[in-house]
Length: 163
Image 1: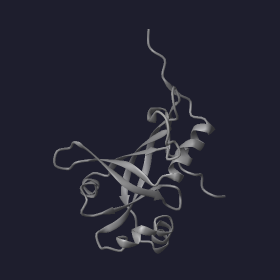
Image 2: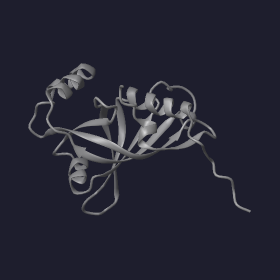
Image 3: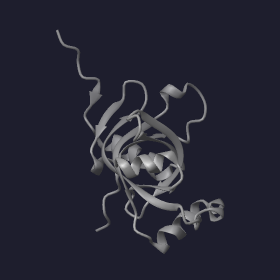
Image 4: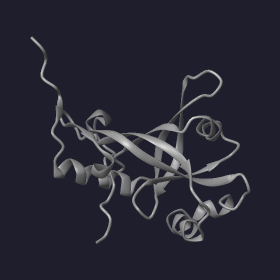
């Protein structure tokens, strides 16, 4: 006898929660593959969204995760619900995104949007080793709390384009 699949059918409530987690994120855990060992490398990064709702990171070229992404664009991003600060952390909503990380073209408007949400980044945003990376979702897994897990496609996580 096989066990029932614990993953629920993706519904509008799951999509809404995933989009909220992405829209409100300020930090996340970035997973990359170390180019020397092939082992997973996890780092905490500052993250926001690009104009189209795609997760966006401002990374230093000196960082190990940047060198890993330059060698292999496969990445993971773990976003936790910033609103849930009390109680058992394992009951809080969290979103794991499997993604491809790609350098973003220079864009003054992107820089200005980043600084509007993170003015302290003014100290390093214009240093020559910093650049923006788009963390483009391939798929996702949303854990919305106990017994509430969903598999997501990119369209489930990103805001639909404006008409």
